[in-house]
Amino acid sequence: MKKAMDLERSRPTAKGPADWFTGDVWIDAITQTHGDTPTVIAAVHFTPGARTAWHRHSGGQTLYVTEGEGRVQSRGERVVRIRPGDVVSTPAEEWHWHGAAPDRFMTHLAITGGDAEWGEHVTDAEHRHEPD
Image (cartoon, rainbow, N blue to C red):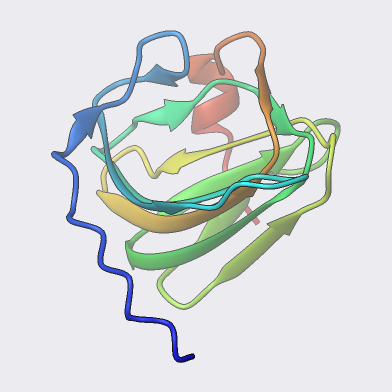
């Protein structure tokens, strides 16, 4: 027997929590799967200078930049500039942060596996570091 199409209605845009972000960040949840490793897909919109706190995901995370200009950094590595069309794949358990450039908006799709652990906020000095 053929399975019927499944339709999920969009949820309202949510403001990103202050424990997770510095600056104004808005999240449009797209979908979430359930199972051994739940996966969440969301469009995340960062205002200029906004960014995540340091964090890691038990199942890793992939970002696809759709507009604007941003920054991303893994712990102990250099800050890297990201632009539309860039794909950033962060392995499971790797501490990292990402966000908008100081003077640009940035939106990315986030495909996140498993649970997240949140750490300290990224300082202004870390964020302003000139990217590669």
